[in-house]
Structure formats: C-alpha cells, structure tokens
Amino acid sequence: DSGVTQTPKHLITATGQRVTLRCSPRSGDLSVYWYQQSLDQGLQFLIQYYNGEERAKGNILERFSAQQFPDLHSELNLSSLELGDSALYFCASSPRGGQTGDIQYFGAGTRLSVL
Amino acid sequence: QKEVEQDPGPLSVPEGAIVSLNCTYSNSAFQYFMWYRQYSRKGPELLMYTYSSGNKEDGRFTAQVDKSSKYISLFIRDSQPSDSATYLCAMSGVGNTPLVFGKGTRLSVIA
Image (tube, rainbow over all chains, first blue to last red; front, side, top):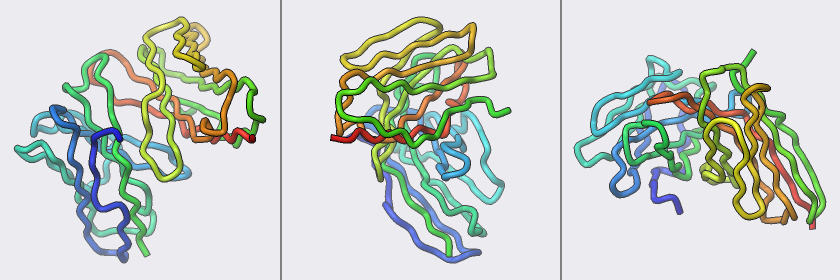
C-alpha cells in the first residue's frame, strides 16, 4: 500500500457529464500529481500541485481542472466528458515540490468509463 | 519521435529466466531514470531509481543507464511468477521537471 488514496475506484458516466476524482496524498507529502493512463498514450502527466499552489502543467485539456485544498487532498474535475476521456486516472504524491530526488508514490487509480 | 520509446511486448518467459527490459530516449536533458512495476488494476510502484550513467543492483534487479547511447535497461534474474506485471521506465531532468514515462512492457513469467 503506497499510502495514496484515490476515490472512487470506478466511475461510469455519460458523454457531456462532469465528474470529480479525489486524491489523498501520503501523510506529510506536499506535492500531488495527476496522470492519465490509456492504452495508446501510456501514462501522461496532467498537472502538479505543491502545498496548494499549481507547480507544473502537462498535457491537461482545458475541460479538465484540478485543485489542492488546505488539508493537501486534491480533486481533479473533468467536464464535458467525451468518449476519449475514458482512461485510468492516477494520483501520485511526493514529499517535496518535485525537486531532484523527490520520489513519486502512486495511488491505485480511478477507472473512468464514458459511455 | 517520442521522447521515450519502450517495446510494449508482451514478453513471456519461463520461471528462472533472466529478463531484459529496455527503453531508449531522445532528450539529452534526462538525468534521473526510474523503473516502475505495475500489477494489473494497481498503480505503478517504484522499483529502481538511478542517476546518470552506471549500474545499480537491488536483489534480483539490476538497472543500467548508458547516457551516451540514450539507453536504459532493467535486468531481472531468476524471474518468478510474481514478477508478472507491466514494467514502466520513467525519466526526468534536473529540478522540478515532469516524469516522462514509456508505455510499459507487459511481462509474464510462466511457472
């Protein structure tokens, strides 16, 4: 068990809908990262938060947004969902801000199915 | 050309075999190299972490980095059925640069 908790485990929804994925980082970790994993693209970095502030942005669509709350948990909001958004979404956390040597620990993921 | 290339397999070997998993990359700024193992329906877990060129050994696992060839490898000795998983290489540059992952190689070790 990595200590990173993601809910829900599975999510089934329809096109055009909006969903929220939740992540609780390991105790003491300040950074949270969101990734999308699909069969054709592999694991793609979406966004990083450090101590409540956005730190780095990857290939995140404008329909997607995230935030990190004062208790350090994070939420990833996906709106106007399309069939192609069906994927595994992983959250990872690390002790610091992603500096050299900062190890990322992954949660078990949320499987999103858009029908 | 993708930044990180990894043969997706699948790779099937008998128990006890030596397994070689590889990634190539194009970005010469990468300095930190990792191997993650991902079991079915689980998140990736860090297996090996190396900096720059050279070898690192941990039990049955050896990670090799050849920066001159932009090539990294993971060797698994005396492979076990419990090693059956997808292995992802990942790498990053100095400072707060995002991890870039390979697509993963699916390994099956047959008893």
